[in-house]
Amino acid sequence: MAIIELRPISRVGEELVSSRVKPESDSQHEALRSLLLGSPMSAEAEVPSLADLISAGVHLAEGSRRKVILPLEGRPAEFALVRRGDDVLVSHYATSGVPEIVVLDRRVSLTSLLNECAKICDLLAMRTDRSSQSAYKRLAERAHAAAISILPDPYASDLPVELSGGTDAAPGEDVALAFGFAATVFPGVDPVPEGSARADVHATLFDGRLWAYARGRRIALAKGPVLLVVQRMVAAVRTLIDAWTAEKSVHVRMRSGSFVVGVRLERGNTASVTLGSTDESTLTLAALEVPEAAEPMLKLANELIRAVASADRAQARNLRFVALRDEVRALRRIIRERTRRDGFVNADPERLRLASPPSSIELSERGAANIASPVGRLRFAERWRTEIEGLDAASTFLCGDRMVVATPRRVIALARDGGEVLWSRRTPRAASMMVGTSLLRLSPDGVVAKGRLAWLPSTCAPVSLVGASARAGPYSA
Image (tube, rainbow, N blue to C red; front, side):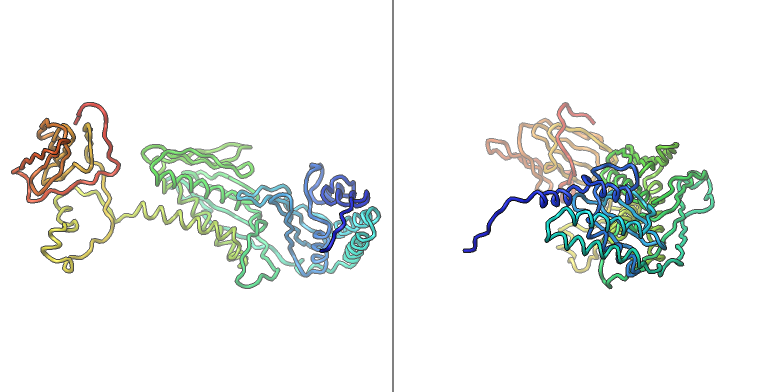
């Protein structure tokens, strides 16, 4: 058995651990934090490790990489370093479902960044034990060497791609809502393995402008990372469509920076949309149909995704873009299914009855092979409503032109088309079942009473009442 000796950490090692876990305790780390994030910044702000920063700086100085992503250990956030000539654009943002930007495209001299990292490594080498000194010295030498031999940026002459889409001219007052956008995208030049996918949040932070036309009036909505604004719009549409599908009312407001999008769905499927900025003013469009409110925002998202993918093919495998594209497709599919125009309200129930699938008896008499399956799906609208004490769907039967409802104490006949009460008979408490044209009543003591209804057709079919429930209180038609 091997015996491992446990020794307490020396004072020097303790300082090294402290400097690694809490680099803000050192003034040099504060200078590095101020260089990356600007001043003033919180003393608790986390920055990438020195080894990661130096490695990223070396790759950028050599020109082998144009962009480096550095994730943090303490929380779901990243630093993105992008080479632009002799400088580096530093961005810091959260990588949660709704990205939050802390710093975007802060210009920092690449030489200053490498020299600052080398200075901290030299300082830590003097405060640590001999085993760690060599590691810090090698890091410092690597940073110094890269700082004095920065190669020219091979992509310095590359220009951004200008994107535009949506509606640029007023569509007219008859169009309730329409959007347009303009954006600037730098295509990625770093090689990406074929078939691989990754979640690149920084690629969604490109700059742009977004505007809307509300009944012919042009409104400026956002300027900056417009895709974040579009993502909040799609999230609001998801809430609206979910409520529309569930036939519920909803009111929700979502933000992206100072931009605000709100949707409201009231009873009767009347929707309203609120757009604008908390810094200025908002605009509300009321009395809209759900597709009329949702489709313009989904169309905007779809056109923006296509424009970015055409400018930078690598974004077609970016999981952030893929998830947004799939969400837009799913929402548009729901709208198409619910607004399909191949249905109608049938004013002739007898004709519908003739076109309905045959009963089981007809199938046995004529043969199921000679009967074609119906195409499509029937949907029904409420024609009349009534309240009956002790209503039970299992004791409700459709018999020709009337509906027989057998409750524990009554047997009631209702007109099939209008719901009028044709007759009502008080009976002792019993369970009811229909056999041919006879109504059987089974009392709790086992007595069976049979009553033939001569005016009924040869068969009576049970009625399926979706969501039917007994209502307390006296009978009312």
